[in-house]
Amino acid sequence: MDKLTLHEDPRSGHCYKIRLTAALLGLPLERRMYDIMRGDTRKPEFLQTVNANGRIPVLQIGKRFLPESNAACWYLAEGSKLILSDRFERADMLRWMFFEQYNHEPNVATLRFWLLFVGEGNLSKFQRDQIPAKRAGGEAALAMMNDHLAQHDWLVGGKVSLADIALYPYTHVCEAGGFRLRDYPAVCGWLKRIEKLKGYVPMD
Amino acid sequence: MDKLTLHEDPRSGHCYKIRLTAALLGLPLERRMYDIMRGDTRKPEFLQTVNANGRIPVLQIGKRFLPESNAACWYLAEGSKLILSDRFERADMLRWMFFEQYNHEPNVATLRFWLLFVGEGNLSKFQRDQIPAKRAGGEAALAMMNDHLAQHDWLVGGKVSLADIALYPYTHVCEAGGFRLRDYPAVCGWLKRIEKLKGYVPMD
Image (cartoon, rainbow over all chains, first blue to last red):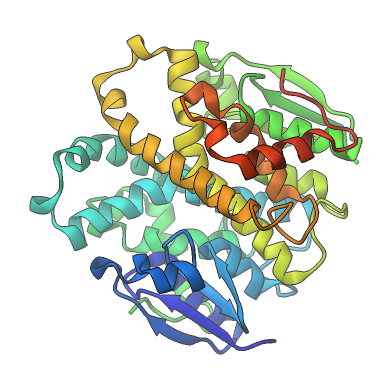
């Protein structure tokens, strides 16, 4: 495989998601750090070379650049057990990964970013006005995971897959966004199962 | 393959995305209609049987249910040319599909839904306050596609793939959300290329 470089901000759960996937697979990954709070990823050089969308993470594979954390995890995990072999289960795994991007991250991760890194007192009125909807959306996403995990050890197919890796990072630090993990006991059990996986690395 | 049934509201671009994928692949698809404006997908029977997330589309495969439009397209397209065979290109295809869910749909599709189906006069103040940010986000997503398509006929790998199918539905009707397609000439050329594909079906 070509040399792998992760363009990242270590505070981002999306970046950690790729680092965790690589660690579980035993793949070496160089790390190049950016500070999103200082606008490092909006600079012309970054936009022209790394990602026109101005976002991290980006997985660099040799001289090619792959944005979007879940796409990067997919690239790393091809041919491994983290991508399920059954056709329906593989699509169902992608289902949870799209759910993560649409229902989970914009609520659970955004509230953590606003409250932990921006700071409640620094939020604009526009941001503050969105907090109740994001709180409700995040609680609905966590409740849906909890209901499913009350019946299953893993999100899909009875074993760990990219679906679990995609949803772990922002779920395990959701309390920084004002969510209460104790309200989701099946989620708590699943977090512990992930943390016992061989090769697991914690977030920085 | 097991019998395929699409649980859908024909006004939804996400539902059309699955119907278009099936049509391009020549796969028969039964259609079961719901009216999302009447809350059909929030009823207990739907939540218990079809999708606990209360959303359509859901692709039913025999007795199994698969939510999330992009996951359903992936299921249908496995083993076909719509999923690119090169490892990097396949991941890059997923990159555009995640971009669609995170950057494109919440802006471009939501404004169409609010302006065309809810009606501007019926929007809440909370919704109206979000319009400028969604307008800017949608324009940024369309501009990013346009910049890329000014250099490439298709989003990935020089041929049509699920990346194009995922982004076509809400892009081709974006004017209903107040976006101007003439501002994105390379996007317009790409829309025409998709509409000439063998098996193409229009949105209802």
